[in-house]
Every structure is written in C-alpha cells, then in structure tokens.
Image 1 (cartoon, one colour):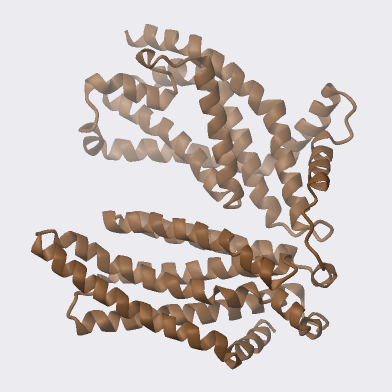
Image 2 (cartoon, one colour):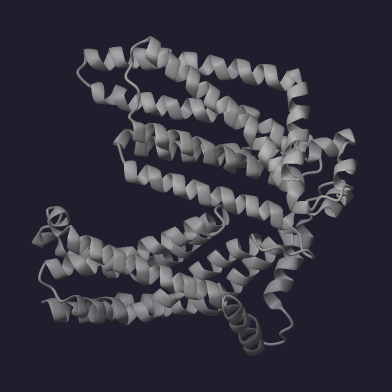
Length: 467
C-alpha cells in the first residue's frame, strides 16, 4: 500500500514539466561547473606545490554536487500534503482505507526518489567529467561515504519537508519554513567539509551514522503526529502567544497549591515519569567515561606528548572543573558556566530530538574518564583525583547534569511517541515544561551548591593532596 501511494505521487511529479525540466537542467549544469573548478584548482595548486588541497577538493565538490539537486527537488516534498489540499485532490487519498502511516511513508518514499535520482545523476555527470579531464577519482572509501551520506541527507531533508507539509496550511507557508531545513543542512555540509579536508575518515562515518539517526527520528515524528482529520480541519495558522504561555504555565504549575506540594507532585513526579531516560543517560555517561579512560590507557604514548609535567594544572582543571587561581575564576563565573552548559544541551537537543544534547553530555563525562587515565599515566592516583578533585562538587554537579540531559533526551522521546489526542506543538510545550520543572526544582539548586564547593572547597582539598 505504501508503494501504491508512492507510484501515484511519482506519476504526478513526472507529468509536470515545470518541475522536471528545471530540475534536470540545473542538475546537469552544476557538475559541469564543478569539473571546471576542480581542474582549475588542480592546476593552481600544482603550480605552487600544494597538491593535497586539490586532492581534498575533488571529493568536496562531489559532496556539493550530490547535495545541490536535493535542495532543488525539496519543493516536491514541501507541497506533498498541503499542495494537494490547495488543489483539492487530497480528499480521495485521505478517505481511502489506507492507514495514516502508509500515506505518510508513501509520500516520504516518492519525495525521496526524485531528489536522490537527480543527485546521483549529478554525481555521475561529475565523475564522467573527471574521467574526461583525467582527474583522479576519489578513493573507494570517499566514494562510499559520499554516496551513503547523499542518500541519508536526502531522506533527512525530505522527511523534514513532509513533516512541515503536514503542519502548514498553505504552500507559501511551507516554502517559507523550508529555511528551517536548508540552513541547518548547509551548516551540516560545512562541518562535513571540514572533516573531509582534514581527512578524518572515522568522523565522516560517524557523521553518516548521526544523519541516519536524525532522518529516522524525523520520519518517526511525522508518522507519530500525522492525523488526516487534523490535516483537513486546519485552515489557518495563528501564532497565539497567549495560548502558548498559558499552556506552558499550566504544564509547569500543575494542580499544586503550594511550593512543597508542587515539588512533591510536579518535580518528583516528572522525575519518576522520566526514569527510563534518566537511567539511559546514566548508562551512556558511564560508558563514555569508561570508554575514554580505556582509549587513553591504550594510546598513552600518543596522548602524553601533548602534555608535559608543567601542564598538570591545566589538565586537572579541564577534567575536574577546578578553576586555575591565576585565571581569577569565581563563584559567579563557575555557576554561570555550568548554567550555560545546561542551556546549550537543551538548545542542541531541541534541534536534534535529544541526540546532540546527549552527545554533549557524553563529551563532558568522556573528558572525566580521559583525564583520570592521563593523571594515572603521570603517576597520580586516579582514586585521589576522583575523591578529592571531582566528588566534592561532582556529587551535586553530575546529578544536575544527568537530570537536565535526561530531560532533553525525554523531549526527543516524547516527540517520536504517538499521542493521538495531542498536537505536535502541545507535546513540545509539555516536554519543555517538564525540563523547566526539573531545572527550577532540582538542577539550579544542585548547580548552586556545586559552584560553592567548586570555588572554595575542592581546590583546597586537591591542593592538600597534590602539593
């Protein structure tokens, strides 16, 4: 049934020459220009003895050639639902015995095939141009990375575009909201380009895995919140700030009449509701700390040359959070730094269904494990470092970090969970309200206590042990 919907959409797309002709023309033109650019770059860099730049530029242009046609074809996915609604052709589809997920997946499949076909067509033309100009092809690993990355990026962008199409009320609105897809993807391409020019093969494969996860999550959000009744009943978009604020406040306050009752019912109730994400976050954190510790132990010689005994204070500061005296760090700076870290995790998590927020948390816990291994290599007991350098303030700071990160992870879980009686906006407001309740009731007090101990207690204990 999914293929039935997909073939219906593809037939409609192929009949419209105003879409197909510009898409094919631009797809064939860009690889030709990229070939000329690659040849000019090779000649220029060879003349000045820097051929490595040209070698990295060829696969970079290959990635750009694969990305550009997807952005052109994105208009097909953006109008997949709302366009049919404006044309009056959506009612027969929605009145069919098809299930909601079958309709959504059929649209997703048809919306992905056209961009992916044009993208691979552009890559093929680009490779033919490289062969004609006798420019060496990228190696097999680079080719595999580019082809797979192009496919998952097409799936990611199309899934996001179709999700927008289900929530918008007009083609104009969905086209304007396309910037929420194109701009983040452009930033992602820039990050991948940096990895490409640096020759980081492992990081690029991790990027492939990350984009794949995000694509699956966005598709899951679309399936979870697609309702044909809501699509037909939504006629106009209204930004009701008053309703948003009232809903947010109602979700935070709950039914409590006093602060103790609010803390008991709302804050602790939210913690119990997020127990699964909290235990997941704890497990991820322990795995990151242990993994980084083992990696540093196995690569001690590679890591040690970057640190001399005179850099010990800086290494300790990075791993334990203890401020260097000469930097003049104080309680407000430490507290503000920890608060910014919590907010950054939230913002990254909101745009990635909790994935980037969780990765930021793993980075923090991974640093602790790496520094403990490094201190062991320098002849300092990791147990002493843990007991006197991390735990005094860490017993408050680490739980605060876990709770806030788990709340961000829960936002992603809530978004991908079907809630037939709640809209996507209501689910988002409720999840952010849960994060706010935990932040006000637990995270802020814990961070405040941790900052006090980190400023005046931990440095004294650590100095008494290491002096």
